[in-house]
Length: 259
Image (cartoon, rainbow, N blue to C red; front, side, top):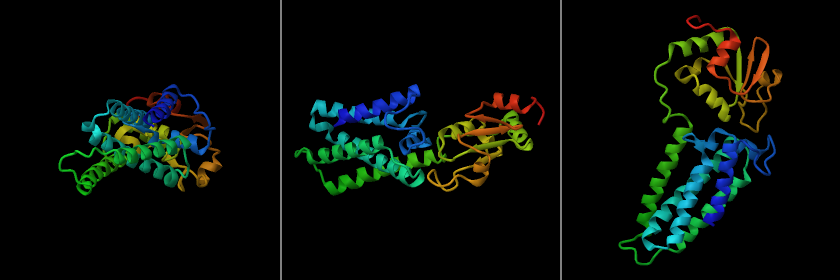
């Protein structure tokens, strides 16, 4: 089972790194939406890559067949299940979409956890299921909650002080009535904002997904004919995709040292 999980996660990781299309996920489908959301990345790497590492560890433990590694197998699979449940909940509630690959991985990890529990060695000293579940369950929940806070931008992104030139550019874009259309679940929109660091809140950003990815697009975005996130409207010209601060400065007529 761990080998199957390795195959799924390795495939998704390679797809993410090469930029190719995932088999069975047409553009705009729920699967495509989930696999391109901001939750598809963790610490700059595809989430599937971390899943691949987890499955690889479990496969290695299964190959070694040593009772001394049972606790490690349990901990890895428990964290994997809870993290998969978290991601599945996000996709169903926040994105209102489902990914067959992700659901398959959740099912595999759940079966692995159940198998590990069933195969608990009988000779573990001073072992108590109640105490063990309390400690490992609490630890796994802390890990998942910590990752959730990271996704929400509450840690792991040290914005620091505003760079004067970056701030001036953001204010210039807002003053020129330039529009930056995006969606909160769009990873490329997050990348665009991160380019401005602590000055991101000064960008002329317009949220197009007020009712979630499955809800209707905000009227202002629909009226503007927005189809891709992010989209910039600069002096009547439409630019789809991420633009570097240098590109934005050039296209908007921003001069260094001037607002």
